[in-house]
Image (cartoon, rainbow, N blue to C red; front, top):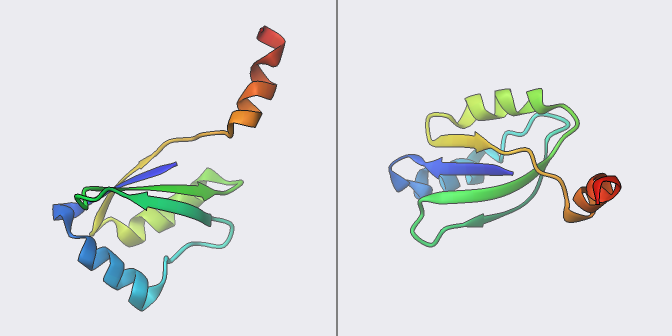
Length: 87
């Protein structure tokens, strides 16, 4: 899960760059879906990758417009499977 904070709540600059350059994702980092707060403060994105290091170049490409928090998550189904032996 990626939590993005638009610097200065300037979502226009972010969406303009996406329109002009795309998401600038390195190979292996996959965008799944996202949700944006209605006050333009944050965007919550679900991303997938096998190598967490792939976030570094992507974050570097956007750090002038966005502050990032990366939160490793698993699906509820995976969580149930992993915790089942302890229940």
